[in-house]
Image 1 (cartoon, rainbow, N blue to C red):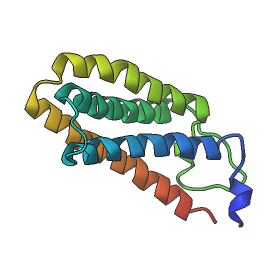
Image 2 (image 1 turned 30 degrees about the vertical axis):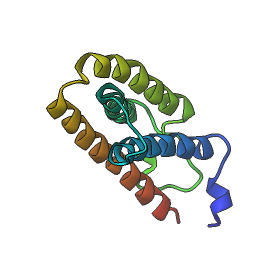
Image 3 (image 1 turned 180 degrees about the vertical axis):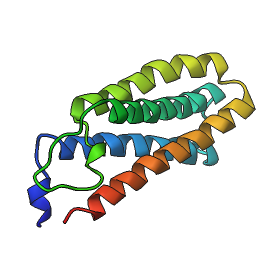
Length: 138
């Protein structure tokens, strides 16, 4: 099946963009902490980590609660496809809840490191499942 058959404008293109945004956000947050050019305060670092972690948690809760979007060709990982609105909602929730949480708790080093590790692991899960979905398109 050619890739154009499953790149439907209703769900796939925007979902991939939104999930990529979450993944890139984590990569930026982690890498920027190790570059000297970026002098981010601990609260800004924590805001990145908490937001990404909460985005991912919200995404997987929505995946468990919502029915997946039907596709033309079944895929064992279609349960990940919940639509643009819920994915965008999980991103907005992560920002809305993660930034205030980080502002309150962002100065604690151990908590910030734990949030960074959690963000990397959670984004790795989403990236892995996204890759599995793409590779299982037949």
